[in-house]
Image (tube, rainbow, N blue to C red; front, top):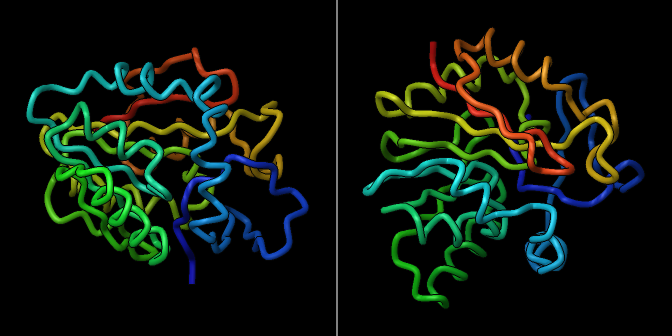
Length: 211
C-alpha cells in the first residue's frame, strides 16, 4: 500500500525501514521518538513557522488542512490563525498523538483526521492546504492532487513546503525535487503556481491554485 506520511526533518538516506519507490518514499513513524526531532525548538530557526503562516494570508474564519500533520508542529500554530485546522495523517499513532496534544493544550479548533493512502479524508472543503515535508511521501501524486482539488473551497490554495535538492538534510537526494518538478507535476494535476517564497533556507515553498 502506498502511504502518505508524517513530516520527516532528519536525514533518512541510510535509515533502516524506509521503502523507496520510483516516485515516493514510505516509512512508519513512532510519535514519541519523532516528537524529539519534529518539535525540537531548534527547528524554528530554519522552519520559520510564524513567517510561513503569515505568508499564507489566512482570512478570518479560514479553515486549513495540515496534511502529513505528524506530531502537530504546524497544526498547533495554525490553530492560532485559523478558525479550524484539520490535522490529517496516515499513521494512527500520529492521529492520536495530535488529538492528545490538542486536548492537553486546551486547543479546541484542531480536528485530527485519519488519512488513507489516496486521500486526506477531509470532512469538509478548506481554504488552504499546507503540506510540509510530505510531498515526497505521496504516491501517484497526479491522481492524489486531482482528488484533493475537490476538498478546496472556491479560491482555495495548496501550499507545498519540501526539501530543496541542496538541503543539508532530508530524504535521499532523488526525493528532493526541483521547483520545476513541483510545477510540472502540479500542472499535470490541474494546478497553476499562484505564489512562491524564497525565505526558507532548506525548503521550497510554493503555493498552487486550481487552474
